[in-house]
Image (cartoon, rainbow, N blue to C red; front, side, top):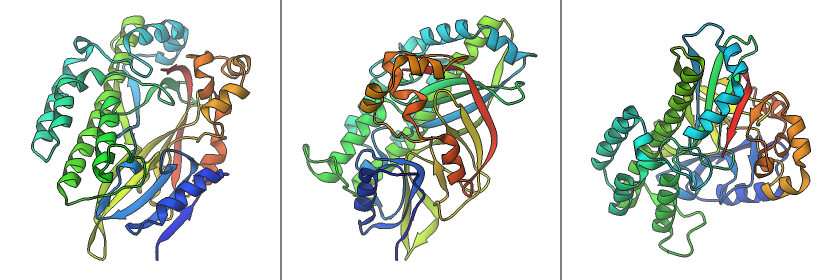
Length: 388
């Protein structure tokens, strides 16, 4: 008997239809919808599936390793006050140093030495496993320029403060960029056996050649996405140092990706291997740190997982959309958007109306819905928000 739970907050019909379609698959043994769930690509955003012996590339999606880091800055007295008084300068200088938006990539010479060395180690590790030669050549020759880039859509960087106004944080939400897209399309086609009809639920057997390749590239993609986020955090740190004129560093409080398929080593079902697929869902095992963003106005929640099995040890990855991008641009005015963002320096224009607070569910309702899955540690409020 499959264990199916649904914690979605007012899901629309398309979300329900997609979820029902996914859970009918024989290889699914459990599934859950998170409070922020909304319709997505093949599987709903905010869905979690336990799958035996198979991997489903379309349930991981086009942005492998998409996720967030939360980092706390330290080393300077009155850092929050100094950041607020220089917020416009910080916004402009970071915007000039971090490529943002779809199709915008980095010059290799602008990628830090530290990140280049980590990338080289990742590539060497990848070569030890099964791999597709086309994917390897892409990683070797083209993917370095994707590091330190934000992308578009709901990806963002925020400089935030805690309630005490004594701590300065940066949260970065981005993924593996073009790497994830290239990999997703390649393995959805391999799973379907078709160059044209591949955008559906097609699984790959985990112990097949393609399955071993996909597991290897998933591992690479998760680590590549972390490198990407960290490279942007380095740029924010360097800008703070330049503008404030003092030595500043940060600690990585958490890195949590929400698009993945991961082997659950301590879990078997009738002797079969189990993979947890999360598509826009944050891992929330007991004691596990996470970060859940609200919207451009309401900041981010730092949380600790409670290990709730009904949620499949997961939580939302954000507030969840209530308006499609098209509907948001039709219904929300720029004047409304600007008014809602008073006091925050950010990318607030016609192009980002579809990311305004009105396009998302009420984050406080979402957090209430998952209070048995995560415990809130801090609520951080933004002073600067960057969007692609």
